[in-house]
Length: 227
Image (spheres, rainbow, N blue to C red):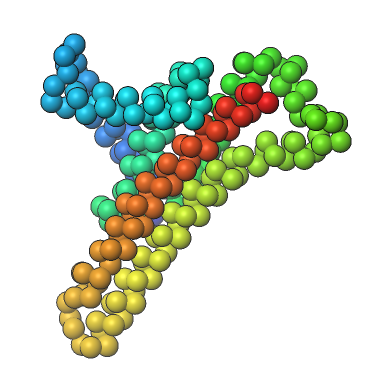
């Protein structure tokens, strides 16, 4: 076992990658089990599944319009995936989204989809023409505006999640130091005081960052396609 991952055939697999694999397997197994016996009249867990799907569809319609409802599966997938990555801190693990390579990879997937959709809906010629609108002198600025999208998406997700992890770690170190000062062998302060901070940074902030990433993805897809 490597310090920050798993050594396989001389290759160090980062912990952030291992956690992502675990989350992917968990989602696949969970979805397979929950959708194995769907019925015409929903009951039990199927009611909650259909409610989640309906809410995601409504969110896409409200922000993108009926024309882009086909993106609901993708938006729902990144919402569930990023949320689980962000909440992994509750298990005592470092959220993979605090690794910039993970946040950037997620942003690049959305970036490719954004521009592929724009080309598909408008044609390559009209898409390229959009870079010179409203007049050709804005070409450099328009290119920068498009290229900065994955940077903006990734840095926002990465920065906020990393900041939360750092703050919680500092709190634990400070409380541990306080316990040593008062000569308490058990980490009494660290067992209780960090709870509200975990609720905010691991749960609330994790949900907010997932929502922001998904919302910006929808907005960029719609605006770039209609530009």
